[in-house]
Length: 304
Image (cartoon, rainbow, N blue to C red; front, side):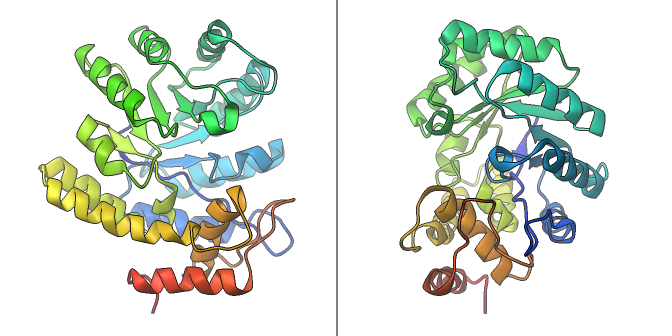
């Protein structure tokens, strides 16, 4: 399976008591599928994989597969510190019906390039699903090398890359080398504010957390890309950047609270999520921060 198009990392809603909110999840996933997205990525960073117990991972994975009901493929994040733990999550995701898995480099215990490459090889040897590498050095403190990725792609170890590195130079080089090799890898950008640049580099799609808020915008951008309408691609990106300001207008918070916290707050304001609750120990946005996000949503025409 080669992923292309818009594959949002689905945000995981919580009830007031901190349990998984299936109804809100289904409402959001169905809304994105109806908007025309081409796949769902469950248990990514926006899906709170780092905060999730094995039971929560199962709940969210099962919900994504059930709601998608074969309409779009579901890939599942199996992120964990070391290889054996990742394999355990991957095999469970496969049992539940995932159509692909997404793994980062190992972290916490320090690894070198040889160990990172072996990590992906061993995962692939222990599953019967396409494996996508998640390049997110800000979280795992390892940047995946272009030559290693190409080697693993050409050998069939990796099916593709979700690039959230923010390294546009590396992504451009990877795009050229991938094209020269016959495109063995599906290249997906997770850098939602410069998707237009990734498409110019030849990306096969995007994995934008912001698509939880405005899936139609990212689908319109993809459609413009397919038509070769570069003015349309850029114009849609400019509008989406203005929407991304929901993560910038909040005050007194940072990191996960400002990013996914803003996404959840926007989804709550739009009536998709019942709450904007965050996993412990992250605080939920309140007061003036909620008002600031509502103002941005109104300015881009998503909220009356």
